[in-house]
Length: 187
Ligand SMILES: [Zn+2]
Image (tube, rainbow, N blue to C red; front, side, top):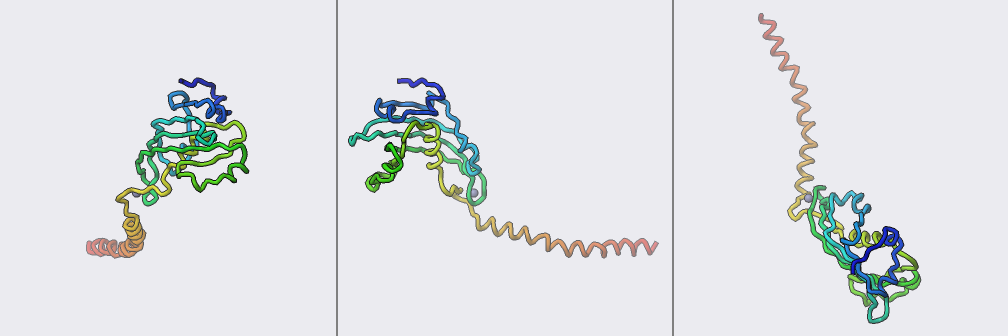
């Protein structure tokens, strides 16, 4: 079922009803922007390939939002700062609870790494939930496979030493001029 709605519906998204009704919404239904990704200095560029949010009730009668998708991005390498291209899939199940207290009290020891419990006392901003997952899926320390920061550090140390080495050359220049003066004196 194609889910048509105004922007307001996504900003005040009724996740509870969505789960109860088994709703599905996809990237082709709404063009979300992700400003927190765009403004993140460690994400040089990104393109969300696809995403899908679906809702269901689990066997325990809990409301569960499932967020999944894939995006391509260039992450700033922690060693050299240049882009590390990556394609990141993400999948998250969010068990909804009516309050922070309920969410905190939830025994999440038994949950797998793809599942979280969130307080959802009222309407949510669906875009924010998606954006959270995109940001969580980003690598903590992106780095080129063959990046050698130690060598680069040595090279830059050598460059830093160069100005000192060139200083004596500056001092010697008056002597070169002296040669010209002597030549001039012979005339
Ligand atoms: Zn690098």
